[in-house]
Amino acid sequence: MSCRRAGRQCARRQRGARGVAGANDESNGIVARQSGFSAGSQLGRSATKHGEHMALADDLDEFFEKRLPAQPPRPQVRPIVGVDECMNHPVVRDRLFELQRARHVQYVTPCWYQVREDPTGREVLRAAFPSPANAMFFPDSTPVKHTMWSDEQVLWQLVANFQCGDGLFFVSENLRGDPAGIWRLLDSAVKPRLARWHLGRFWLVVLWRKHGTSYVDYAAAMSRIISTHSPAPGYSAQCL
Image 1 (cartoon, helix red, strand yellow):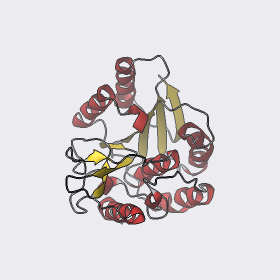
Image 2: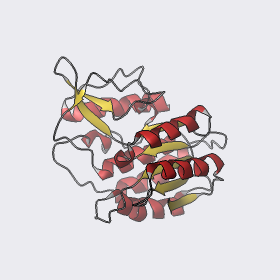
Image 3: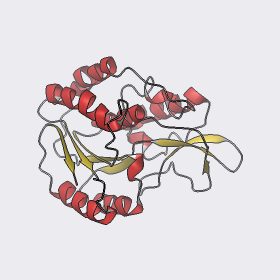
Image 4: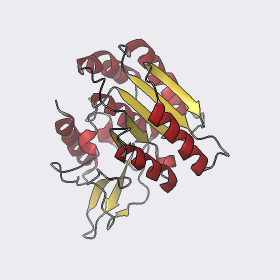
């Protein structure tokens, strides 16, 4: 299944879960690249008004053990960068889009979406920030209050990109150690599975922003790492 086709299915299931409309399925930019195998069962629970914990272990095992081996090796495909909501900062975004324009990365994608209200009053699921390849962001819409995108959904939105490339970067500053937080989920759920099923080619590098590091300094360090990174299979993380 192509990234575009799977992405369209993801978008349809996401909006169907809550009765919200989706972007143009044929022309969307970011979700067309989000092909996660479990988009229907996992991402379809997105943007709910009350958070819902999902049992990750069995689904992640199936994803890493059965779905990833079906992907053809893509050694020449540039890495993908996923952005956590807490890193939705213009300095970071601008530097990432510079890396994309310089062809150091395949694309930059938010790992969360928003329920927004368009001028007609209709609730729609939209990408969380605009990007050069993103046709799903509409500035005339406004966020709907009291909706959320859980850290488990951020994780699924991130790992789904393995179906479009062998290497991922993830930028975040969410270093809280709460059980359902992204730091703990990555360390306890994704790290051991990548160690077991990386197949010699899949890798994820997490670049955390430490408290006290300015966004300017973080963006500069992040840019150096991404533009010069030598891939090594598995999971690794750095605090910048």
